[in-house]
Image (cartoon, rainbow, N blue to C red; front, side, top):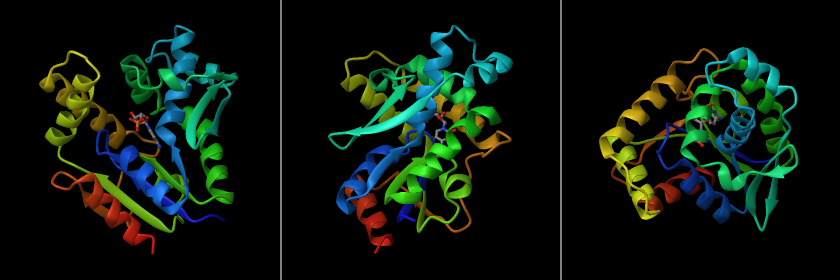
Length: 218
Ligand code: DC
């Protein structure tokens, strides 16, 4: 069994930035489970399936093969042999992912892959259900959160920096809707595991959060 660090939390809490830095410092592998869900969502989108069409989504899971690979230390997602990493952050993909990840069959499809990665390697894995479902015996569990306004502002700044046009209130509304879906779905809802350390990053720098988590690993 590898040394396992589980980081869960809502959208925009900074999980991937923090998890990547912790992994780098500790020499562990960073596993972004959201990227796996996003890879699967691309499969449904490319088939023209609507997010509401659960029957078609479940059927389409059968011929989706999601794999992750590390190239120069960076996680790449392959969908049926094609590298789809460049498409993972598209807005349409994010919307589809948030909706289809409530379906138990979609979650089951990725669960073994996630557990398998942590079995043999030291990992920092981030997601929504890592400490509660995927790695219940993780050595370190963190629930990383921040206020809705802070998370919306971070996403807004990110999009503006990329040259996008967006509206802060719209982003905030979208984040509230995603929280609602992630926290209230029946299978593997977003919850703080009983033994997870709560970190609210609203008023913390990235460096401060990284130091806190690295400290927990020692
Ligand atoms: O972390 P992210 O924004 O890349 O996640 C995209 C979506 O995938 C998000 O709406 C919730 C879902 N997800 C999930 O249900 N379980 C995980 N372990 C990771 C992500």
